Image (tube, rainbow, N blue to C red; front, side, top):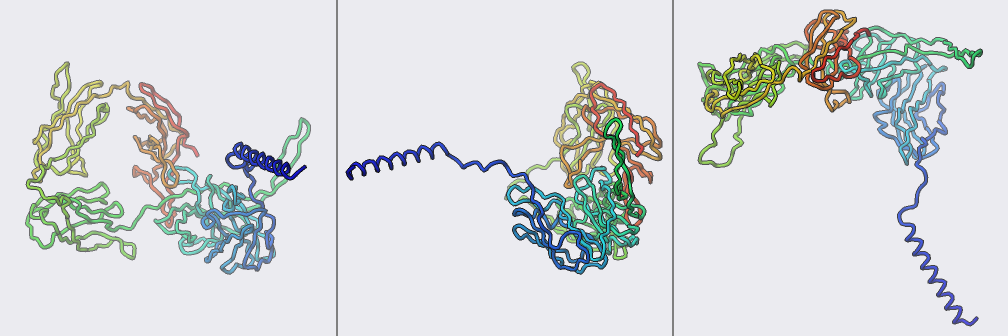
Length: 590
């Protein structure tokens, strides 16, 4: 074959090869598949020195895996028990983890390093699981164990990531002043397991250790505690299993315990009293707040101005932790800057509430900086609890923006009879804590149509502002619009608070349910409790053992050995329907 034919054939071959590559590339767009997803967790292939090593005197531990790994939140999840003042450093080295021990080790002591689920593979994040490394600085491994659960004292829900500390010293102050002898952490079910313990009597507390110092900060962190010391034991147990009709097998095993410890975590009520804020957000009002409710002996003296008449009207919350002063003298509230001398009780260094005096300077800055020839007219705002449908068993709440000057006889309540509105008698009572809040009550007629009116300029506040006209029409619900719940309380002793609540669609920061108390009844013994006038919906029920008989749930106090009052929840929710009665048994025996 001559060279021309060879060259033509070569060109034809190259052309077909080029076209084939184009066709192949067009038929294979995208990335090639990588095979099935990796769901296999990493495996430990070597430990240097090996776990359960005796007479340990090393400064580091290396743990090798069969693949590259990652550490996920290891600073939060890794703990060593007994704990050390200088925490070990955990470093990642590709396919192995290096743990560097920074502090001295106790003699004749068994240590455990708990990684929880912090070790995951490098590609898919598959967790190794709850991996633990154990060693002893003595000639033997301690093997005793304790386990149990930590729950929130108010919700009875499991608490995740709480620390459980145990101490051989039984002094009340040890959780505050000392590192624990051993510790563990709760999982998502609130379960904890303390392992490799020496035989001894132990004081046990659970702490939400927010600052990770392995100590309890009173009033700032949550705590739970056992009322008595606990002694771990090991017992030989046996279990009989049936293999067939005529065949049984007995299995012997070692059991450790107690394994049913139960700690209720609570936040102590703050006891330190001090003023948290003082401000003048409105020209005519001063606002003061305290850290806790209680008697504070608050007094105020106006400086730089001599007045012989009262110059304010006071409002305070039920607990006296919020105080509002409405300035009534124009010579005072027209001044932008005011100086006061305050006196009140404040907790001192000896934890006693002692008289304290301070001077404050409160400034009001007018937010309306635009130039106007004529100021806008200011009205007295009135808010009410009225909606289009009024509950048959409730009154109408009225709140005025500022304290009133004069009487409230200009409020009118009307009932629609046929086509005309006729006046209705009512009772108006003022809130004991506020000079601006009132409640209007009357005997409502089911399915009745009503109207509430206040004529314009019929009311004036202490600053001369008049109200706008108010007119609201509404209908009162009938009895068939409500459901009723009858509870049969069993096994309860002492004063009980039976509370009906509705759960919210959101949870708190710690993942616990949030609910609103709808109604409550106080009873002195087991029996029947009735909740009526209930709107249709789902409700929960709980019972508080009101041991101090003060009509509310009380938290605990660790240093005084006071546990939080017990709360029992009725399992599940009750579905209340209109014009329907529900009967439900509620056994409080625990």
